Image: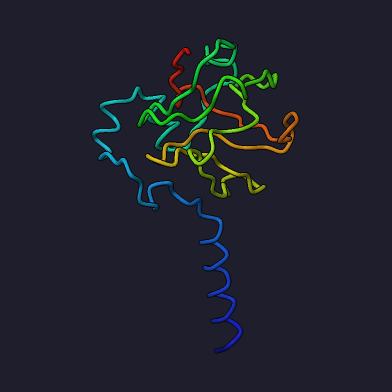
Length: 155
């Protein structure tokens, strides 16, 4: 293999490494067709949950909700976060320091210049938000979640 062919393959491989992984690439317990997702979600919910978008900071009423209860996935109703782990991060998005064990999965998000950790529902793959290392004790994590991905159920 000559240098030009080698560099061409390296360039293609590095380009592919920057393409974001799609939650749909994994098989999930609950699946819907694109048409079914679009029928059950608002355009903003679809953009966030299925296309890994982000709602505008401060736009979710769940950001300032501190009632006792559980936050469920809007896509499949899986319990994701307890109100006991919610806190005011000051970011404008609902924030939690811990998810309900086993119900939120992660994957690398390479859409920006830095690699972030994306959070999604384990059961249906819906995009929730991202996790950062600037949260409170005991975990030091901030699960920064799009409110449109959640449904709050009071205790």
